[in-house]
Amino acid sequence: MVESLSEGADWQSATCYLNDEWTPLIDAKVSVLDRGFIFGDGVYEVISVDTVGGIRAPFRAQAHFARLQRSLDAIRIDNPLRLEQWLQLTAEVIERHPWPRQLVYVQITRGVAKRDHPFPAGIAPTVFVTTSPWPPIPAEQVERGIAAVTHADERWLHCDIKSTSLLGNVLMKQYAIDQSASETVMLRDGFLTEGSSTNVSVIKNGVIAMPPKTAQLLPGITVDGVAQIAQQHGVSVDVRPIAASELKAADEILLSSSGRELLAIVSLDGAAVGSGAFSGKPGPMYRQMHQWFQQAKLEDARSWVAQRDAHRGARRPTERIA
Ligand code: PLP
Image (cartoon, rainbow, N blue to C red; front, side, top):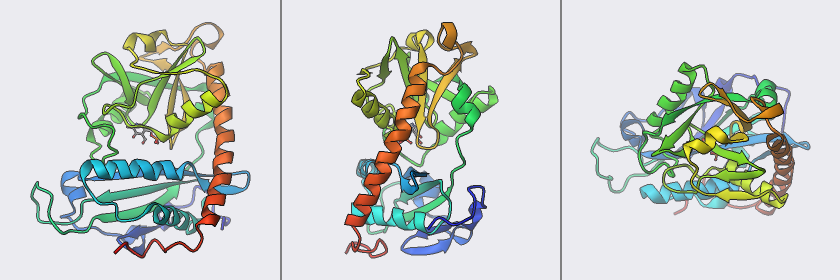
């Protein structure tokens, strides 16, 4: 139930699900021997929750859990819960908190063991789920766009795994902040990969181009939504490698992620993006996509409610699979 507490309410009042138990977030503890802490040996998901048309719902929850499954498979951790249990757990963590906008965080690590590189046998993964208030995306960023800088992508070659080993991404985000920019757009061998925590698409002559889903970038749920929505409305989407020169020549550059939704990059390395009346400003495709995206959220919220009702009575998430 949505209560009166505002989104600004103290995140420290949150509850979390940690290894089968609900605990106040502030009191939750994992072992210093957890392989997530020692090796970054874990994967995660972040799912946005918004209240649209009076419905508070996560956006594309099933797609997030499908990606979680792929990440777990890639690092050979057995999924501790089934899809319907994940969906029920997501519903429960949202329900336990009053915020109309939330970011649900799911993390699974290989578990606790004596420090040693090989996968230990017979340990249970650490499962952690929590949520926090998701402040509205600043209106100024939506209206005016954001500045980005470019940098060589120096991360490893499995960026498709949503790994908790995020040092490379953290350094790239800080690089942006140090340059008074809002995001770093990364390039590998002269081609666009992604942002430090976002996907990046380029718009030229009414066509949205986005890099293919290779191991070099995270297959974003939001950018997938952008592609789908664009195609539904007859906008061409071209999935192909994007050269650095195309960023410079773009009419518009679009950034997307669960936490930031869609934003226009209006300045890149200090140069205005686009030309004419839209030089350095969010362009018409951004505005159109942003509007369609909000509609898609409403449709998704309605299908979440239908799907949740259909699964009522499923096994409680706290019952582990034998
Ligand atoms: N790329 C990276 C490196 C990210 O960390 C994220 C999100 O956190 C994204 C892309 C966007 O993914 P999504 O739209 O699923 O949030």
